[in-house]
Each structure stands twice: as structure tokens, then as C-alpha cells.
Image (cartoon, rainbow, N blue to C red; front, top):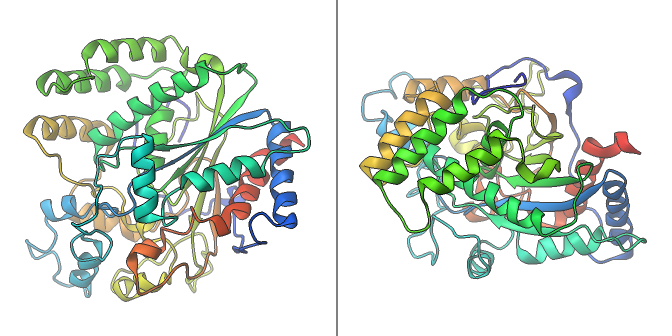
Length: 424
């Protein structure tokens, strides 16, 4: 996307990303806390320090929620109107997308969206999901300890849970909450304008970062006041303690006056984030996308995932094509709003954010098989089979590999190499 993206949806382009993309193969690396592990992480820390990185925030949501957004697919058609005619295997594919039948969600789970970003929720999610699609508190502590170099300069690493409400209103509210969180976190530290903060987001948390990029743009934004107007109208119609129009007015002033974080640069990393919202590159630093991608095409276009849907249902549990959440949870998918007021706000935002609505449009988007967004560097990783293929809660259909400790060094090195090697 160009600068001043103005909340436009990303383009589903099948064009070769060229030099923006690389194709490494995942190597588990050395055991955590071994001498070789410490050396590798220390080298990453040294590179981050040279690039003035002063903090890292790891973001994720509830990995056992409706990751594929199947509720919206069913609402706009699904199999109810005969769309399956002529599309072999679509019924079994949709069964793997639905939370009730894909083996990911369980009603007896102790926590469900919306999530709060507090210690008790962190602990509960760690106990439930462990490292499958979840940056545990232990992972974040080890990462911070690992990148502590010889100069003993600490780069603070923290985790942040977003609400995991997978629709436009939910993601916009989550972006507002993240902006306020970052404002408070940075204000307590002695950062300067040449310092950088890295946001590392798993899955749909990357959509929150995409919206963030549009909200914090330093360019002109015709849609930004309209978006705040929609949200203010919804908040007024559906009052909840702690949220007010005055709160939005204060935040809007911060963004319009370009005083967000007092000029500290934000770099963003997404892990398996489906291509949806476009990115506004005028307002933040560097951008990297990491995607679990297995090259199975026979036409030489290795940057694309498999186009045809019929075989996807039996491929998914074995992660034959990589991350199927990244491939299939594209425009047209979402959970359903739980009130008329929220539904109206969602409709109003959809007119701005997402022109691809309807079941047939979703099929069109999935067949375009886009892995790399229009902006930023893209690393398509051959992760192979991760977790027990018989247990969807371990592999999340190729979406659960990014947050595991066994891949910590690999991820850290990809971030350092792709975003910061130019600063050496």
C-alpha cells in the first residue's frame, strides 16, 4: 500500500514479491539455556541494541477461539444457499473451519473471549494453551534474558493479550486499548525519538497492528475522523463502564497532533496474520511478516499457497500447505456481533475497511492464495509438521508453530536479520 493508505483493504495480489520475500527452512536449533543458545540470543540482542531497540511487546489472543471466522461465512451463505454446487469438498472444508466441529474450541474451557490483559488471564491462558499459538509468560522472560548482552543493557520484553473479538468493532476497540497501553508503558521509560519498540503479533493480533498503522499515520487521513465518529456513536448507544466519548476525544487529539509515543519509532512483526487490512507505512518504522508456508505448487510460483480448495480439507490436519488460518481467514470471515448496536457499528466500519463481503467473495479471496501482504518484508518459512497432527489444539492447522520455545532463536534471528542487519 502507498503512504496515506487511509484504511483501504489490502490487495490480493498474486504477483511475485521479488526481493521482499525469502524462503528459509525452520531449524529447531540448540536447547534453551545451553551455551550455544545463549550465544545465539546474545548476538540477536547485540544487533537489536545497535539498532536502538529499547523494548519488545509480544501480542497474541485466544488460540482456541473462532480463528477461521466461520460464523460470518455461515451468516452470508455457507452451504445454506447451494453455494456448494460444483465445488467438491466444500462441505467438509467448512466443517474444519467451524469452531464447533474443527476440534479447536471446547465449551468446557475455563476462559473465552473477550480476554483481558492481566496477570490472571495470562496464567489461565498459559495453563490452557501452553505454547500453541500463545506467547507464555515464561517464553517472554526467557527471550528477555536471552538477548541480554555483555553490556548488560536490558531490552524489556512484555506480553499483551488482545481481546480476541474477531470482527471490525472488536479489532478497532482492541487497537484503541493497545494505543493506550503503549502510551502508558512508554511514558514510564526514558525513551528518545531515535529509539525503537518492536511489536511482535501472532495471528489475528496482526490485524490490530494493521489498524494501528492506519490510526497513527502522520499523513492525511480522511477516514480517521469517521471511524472515531462510528465508535463514539456505538459507545454512546451501548454504555459500558470505563469507556466514554471523552476518552475517544482525548485519544483522537493525541493521534491528530502526531504526539503518539512522543516520536518513538514502532517496528511491527506479524506471524501468520491473514491478509486483510492494508498497512499505512507513513507513521511507523519497519515491517516484517513471517508465514508458515510449504511449497507445494508445481508451476514455480513458490510465493503462493495452493489455489484449489477441494483437497484442502484432508490436507489441513497434516499442515500440507503450511498455515491454513493465514490462508483461509481472509476477507468475509469473522465472528458475529452480539448486540444490534454492535452489528450496526460493524456494518458501518465494513463499508470503510472491507469491500470483500459475501460467501462468493470469500471464495474469490481464498483462491487468490496471497501469502505476502502488499507492504513490508516477508519470510515464508518451511516449518514442516508441527505438533501432533491428530490434535488440532496443538497444530491449529499450521497456525500454532510461531510461539513455541523451540523456535525462539529462529524467530529472533529472522527479526534481527531481516529488519536490522542494515544497521550493522
